[in-house]
Image (cartoon, rainbow, N blue to C red; front, side, top):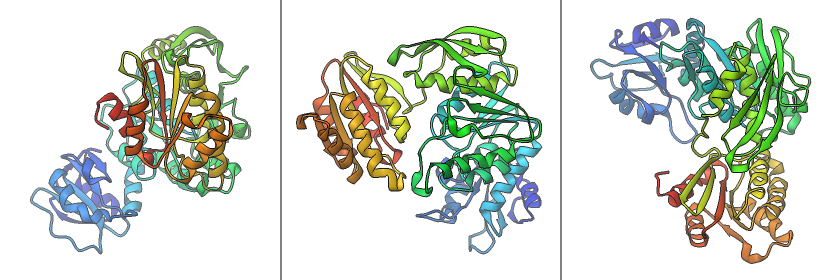
Length: 458
């Protein structure tokens, strides 16, 4: 951000208390993440109000953005309080202004599956040509993404912004802030259906970003996804398709290698080059094609893409293949779960030799489709693994019962209520030669099981 507290206050029409000349270099909404030079934004939360942590944040950072009507002690020497009527609105305005002020080329992406992996791939591909920044992890919400925009180092020329949603209107809000020059869609599928009446409503919500593509920008669509067939942005100078046979960017001569990745020929523009992608699962090819289409629109060549692809690694807890010991393979996909993402990983497990163990946590935020989605997952798991462990409450029970109804022997299906119990069960049943898939929604905390199996910190 590289502003003073006084400049921020002037921009926001805010009241300043404390040191106006204190320098700000980034922003944070989580007091635990605040570092020296950051602006802490105090936002009301479901459990706690960020104003309760202002004192702690000021000890670590330079200033805090707070509401006018909240009683707080004066800031310490060398710190500042910036008071506004609406902290969230001011925070979004500040991020939108930063996006306008910086001479960036901005690439935005959204979808239901593969967003974070595709974002990481795209940042790696663009990094072969440009000083590139990207939103960290899955900080893709109306709370996390503005902080990422405000915290990018000054040398960044291209910024890759992952944009997520759980409710209608959230992508419209992010679109007004991000205003991408390139807009990329991964595949759209049921996710967060607790907050949407049907899949069509999810598709409409994803389309909220189309109106925010910069004039003359590039729209990148998944030709293998029928939900994107009607997507168009009047201000786009070009639409690029990927993924399906006949798409402008596609894979030919695909050779899936399971946990070892995939080999294929990348076809784009007038180029055709062999690619070795080391990420587990053939579904990662679609993610790479998405990233290649966006990067190609900015001048990255197929040869450069192939070179970068060979060195890609899965992010922690997102399909990373680990070896707790030489005789056991662990596929750690514990960060999140949805019906399509789980299907893809169970298909990968089914194609892997060895005794196959699936540890599946509940899929959250599915609403009315939760019961059937978990039952369908149980039926698929019954044909994909030799041992199934389900983790959670009623939905985990649905998953286990569906697997048992598919004629799995009772000894092959275990249901536990939480991660601590799962740790005891799984560590007790692991055998040499096992391939273990761990996948569930983040709230199930299956990363703690991975940590127990690998001896690393969760």
